[in-house]
Length: 493
Ligand SMILES: NC(=O)C1=CN([C@@H]2O[C@H](COP(=O)(O)OP(=O)(O)OC[C@H]3O[C@@H](n4cnc5c(N)ncnc54)[C@H](OP(=O)(O)O)[C@@H]3O)[C@@H](O)[C@H]2O)[C@@H](O)CC1
Ligand SMILES: Nc1ncnc2c1ncn2[C@@H]1O[C@H](COP(=O)(O)OP(=O)(O)O)[C@@H](O)[C@H]1O
Ligand SMILES: [K+]
Image (cartoon, rainbow, N blue to C red; front, side, top):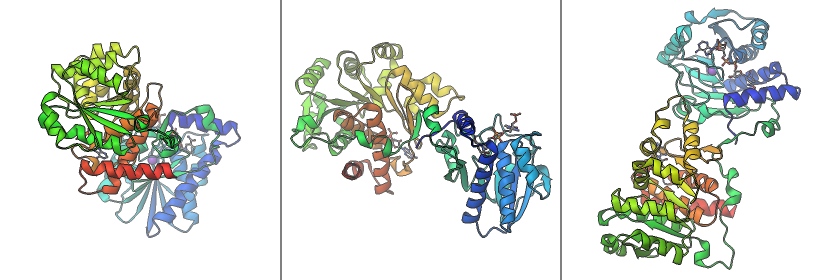
């Protein structure tokens, strides 16, 4: 599903108006959907307090208040400021025939339903004054909260908290989700998100051309690799995975196993001399090849027709490793997944890395977690005015790479501006080696010819689904097999 920034949502609003759906009618539908969810989800609440702000978010609140009262509920409205005279919100306020209290006088109770219509997409600065105090009182009282569009205080474009924010049990948003619903901390503050149809025609999206999606199979399933019946193993993708020294071979094995389980026909672990014995005792279907110097790597890639390589998990960050990473970046055109230690190596000589990327070769997928992202793109990481999506996009454009900016709300971004926010991750994936598995999944899909952005999105989603299936107590070793089952279902459907 497309994700719209608040600015794009404003555009949708104007386009809908041109198509004959006035804001007044959209506001009626929005308030109606809020009232419907309130009745369906919280039928046992004795009283409802609707908190209305000065803008259209407040307008939705007045509509919901009127409809809930017409349904027989005891409804009170509290407002922080009057809507602008002549606005649709002012018209909605006029249509509310009950009393209106000053927000400063509102005393929340634990057993009431609070409908939060203070601020939505138009939140322009940190909460303060009567609104902030009301938010603090609601939080302290522990009332059930249904947020209109967004919990007040959550930025729709970044999910960041602006000063203070409500914790909602449920958030009803309209037409399409916004980044603030999917990015943390906003995602947690929204509670369950309901995306209501308020009559904006889907056709407006053709004009808006959104470049952000919630990561879902519908975006990339068509591009999943499906080998021809007569394919031989190397035609199903040969993935090379670089191992580190003897005491750090497990990470490479996890990546290799994941690559094999995600359909690569052949997987080879490239090993420095001292790790050969350790790897040989552990690998069965996965092949093993020794390298002493970067030239050996180049020769292997060429002779054995490697289709994608993973470099970084457990790799090390010394001079030898640096030489290998540089050779891969400068002298080879094999698609690369650069993770973990290889990211650190690149970050040691950023100017050189970015200069090479001017040519755009080879195809590159970078998989930084928060710390690694900060090492590679320190200025972007420190820029608190940017959302995680914007940071990932700028990083992707700068590195001419697909960037998988990992975390509980992983963002995948391409250098052309396309981006996706992943929503199926689970905390059980926060376990050592889980990122190594993800790197292997990406390489397998890349090596089988899937375009890099789609391969990255698919790998992240499959990884998330595998984590959910295994659940509590999973270790990274469990993920490749679980990922295989997820992928098998995706391609059989
Ligand atoms: N788009 C659509 O299709 C539809 C949108 N709909 C609804 O419209 C909502 C967006 O409405 P909106 O643009 O009027 O913004 P909203 O969130 O009400 O806030 C703006 C007001 O708050 C003020 N203000 C801001 N920050 C403040 C602060 N910290 N502290 C104090 N004041 C602050 C700001 O003042 P200003 O900055 O102008 O001084 C302005 O007066 C959207 O969330 C959805 O619910 C639906 O009706 C149906 C269709
Ligand atoms: N709380 C979380 N919820 C969902 N996914 C998470 C969470 N924490 C981590 N992950 C995912 O787990 C993986 C961890 O990768 P990484 O940090 O590289 O770990 P490692 O280096 O141990 O393999 C990433 O895919 C990340 O997105
Ligand atoms: K709100």
